[in-house]
Length: 161
Image (cartoon, rainbow, N blue to C red; front, top):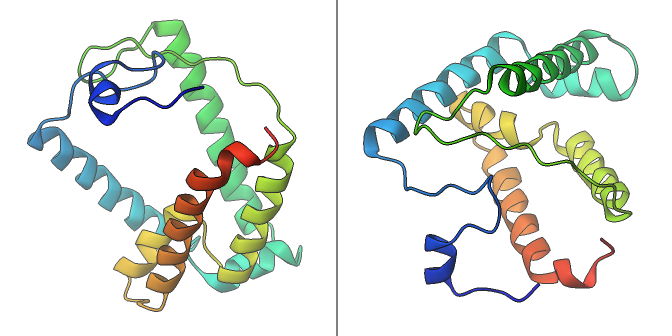
């Protein structure tokens, strides 16, 4: 697919899931508040603990599997309710959940993601909660994740999809 210039990207979304209007400052503040609450839940549930994640990968504890399984159930229920009740965004836009297709690259990406998770003890969500908890060495992990995302953006056309 040919790339569009940034001015075209800002005005014409490619699919119905792209945002049509920029968020206001109060809306961004709500997102910040939800993010802080989400981080507090992560800390209290101990899912930012490197030791809990190591327990999971060594199959020594059910803790992380219970948390992840609960998140999957909540996600399934949320998608069901969004579709069933025709829930709209806070800006009044229709929520469109397009069907997903399987690509070979998802296997390689999943393996790389899991390897990084096992090595660092964090996936993208808990990174911010770990930094907010004072584990400043995690900034290296965050910068590595940003670098990995940036690298993927550059080489994605050469990867199997």
